[in-house]
Amino acid sequence: MKKIAELPTKRLILFTALGKIVPDGRKALQTCIGYLEDLSQKTKSLAKKGLSVTAIREELIGEDTSLAPLTEGDFSADNLIKSTLRPEK
Image 1: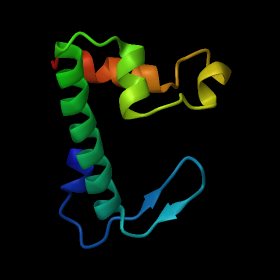
Image 2: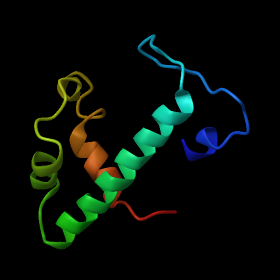
Image 3: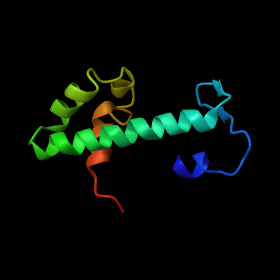
């Protein structure tokens, strides 16, 4: 996302998988990046305190998405939390 947000273009329009067109794509990406960086920082802090993935998710996000059972857990808030705890490559 960072690479896309930093592209040297005058306009950046996003076309989402849900069919939504985002005219100010750069701003939307920067907002999303900020959210994910903040979530990652908070997740790591709570993990250092010994909280489980489920406890972290409940504190930071709340209930899991309704897509979790439909995707057998692949698209879930728990996986989002787990991904922030993986070591960076």
